[in-house]
Amino acid sequence: MNNSIKKYVVMYLFISGVLLHLAIVVVSTFSIKTIVSTGLPLPVLAKKAYTNVNKNHPNIAPFLNPVLVGISSWKKDIEYGYVVDPFRWQGVGATVEESSLDFSSTIQVFSTETLLEALVKAKAGDVIELLPGEYSVPQSRIKLQGSGLANAPIRIVAQKLGEVTLYLRGEGFLLSSPYWHFQNLHLVGSCKNHSNCEHAFHVVGNGHHATFENNIFQDFNAAIKVNGLKGNYPDYGKVIGNTFYNTSPRQTANPVTPFDLMHANDWQVNDNFIFDFIKAKGNKVSYGAFFKGGSQNGVFSRNLIMCNANLQAKTIAIGLSLGGGGSPNKRHRDGNDYEHTNGVIRNNIIMNCANDVGIYLNKATNSTITNNILYNTLGIDVRFKESLATISNNVLSGRIKARSNGRITQNSNNLVLSRSWLTAAEPLDDLFYAPVNGDFTWQTNAFEPMKAVNTEMYKDFCGKKVSFPYVGAYAGTDFCRNSMNLTNAKRQFKFTRDYEQHNEN
Image 1 (cartoon, rainbow, N blue to C red):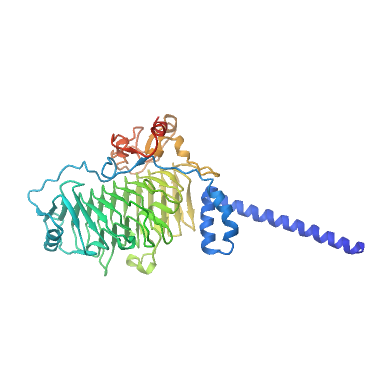
Image 2: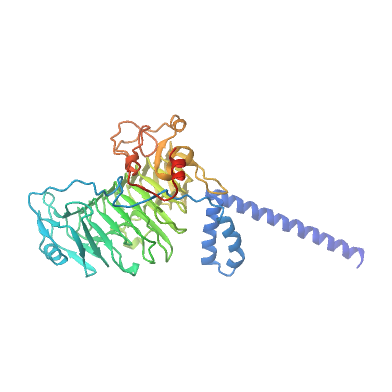
């Protein structure tokens, strides 16, 4: 090889080496910038990449999976410290300590047959009282057709929560007429195949002004499902002081969302406890509750959401949402472009949704997100150009992020602490007394610098009507530990007594 050829070979190798290293630098820089811009801890991002690669690029998955799994394992997981027993629970949600009801007269039923007969004949002003016992309904749909009135609703009640259990399957109760009120009932989805236990109540069409109060909903995919039908919409519903949960991950590809609303306006979902809504099949994404489908004026207030409590899973669970996973525009009420408008999420505590955000806005315009505490979640996402949000006075770890042209008109006085980039460790542990166990009492040195912006005042998470602005889900320094079951002597700890003392002292 002559010198001229050697010269060109050396030059070629040099230029190739420079270009190769330059490409590596550019790709690495771009990758790092992309990773940083997500605002996600590296183990969480690796987990998302793992899911994406296996779904969309299966040919290269065997080469990347070991690295992605290894990085995912760096994540520092948090597990709620107590066993949640809804019948021992004394806090937010349904309680068996509810005082007995007092009506001048009731229609008493004592069996499934007498219950179904009374439901068929129900008329305005009737109070149908289920006597203590178990009621197993064989059919998959029970139509409720009688209409109540504003001053004379039809009431289906038990004297005290825990005395009456209804076993349902399929669609449960189909409610298409107005002014029904359900109270103190324990409703259980009784299906070996989880896809067969869809709802306890399906509220449709003209089923407006439905009220659900102090009930326990167990083992349904979407315990309360609400949607319009043939141009009629079940507006003005109330879901107050209930408990929703599942005893195992839902083995279904169907939507898993304990409260699932399409189309309907002006619903209030307040003072509920929603936990363990894990979807084990399909896209493995679930929600605690959402409003969507072109609806408006929905309120989520003073709810306690624990994506994982008794159950643990690596799937994605999101706390509260305006818009949920979205729906086709052609199915939106009145042809609206948005999924939800004028929605409010305030004074809620959302915990242990570790693999995704605690609050998600999807095409949710004119949204107000204020005075929430998000612990062990990835924060708040505002997504798509239709989304427009005011976000203020919240305390959370992770991020507040506008994605895909989502807009945040006000992002003020939020206390946002970044999770550890390498391990996703939870920084709110330094602000509150023992948040891993639900004690959100402020650490003395954390509360002092908190200053809130003025917003319209409502009852805080602890039920106090407050006349001054505050940061977080409750006002002042005295947290309502009773609302989190912490003053209940019957609460059951998952781990050792030493661990309990470590996290409470």
